[in-house]
Image: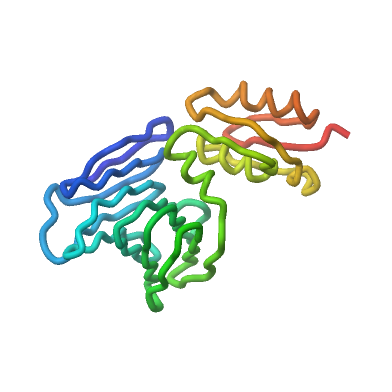
Length: 212
């Protein structure tokens, strides 16, 4: 079966084995109605958050255009659309193996992000998992978060592109909370009021520049 979400919809679902999947906007998940065989395999185009049901005899595998993510009983986020030709995997809890189309399996630990570019594993780095958890839960609590990190979350939530006209303002820091299910305009207004910077939204692009 195939589930497709559109630009303004996301979807929660439970697979045959009890695995919960949160599928983000503009995403496609292909999955069997019943898992058979030695592994539980699904295919993803877009972004999804997985809570995998544990089954040591039948590994859970997420297939993407640039490689597979093999789960070992865990909670993780996969995005094939961060940029063209790229898949990112962020491990929140547990353990996953990342298997590029060309290359050996690399095991991730909680708090690590893997990047697959083309058919190769290019980087593994430590990240703050909070923005990825926030996308799933709908609540983002931040303490000393930079404007760049904050707008990354906003971009993911509202499916907009962020364009900074100055690198200097990326490092502005904030403390507070955001609710994903509020509309984007009050969020933009609040940031403008606090910082005095200029933010415009047009054709799905949020442009940020210093007023000076």
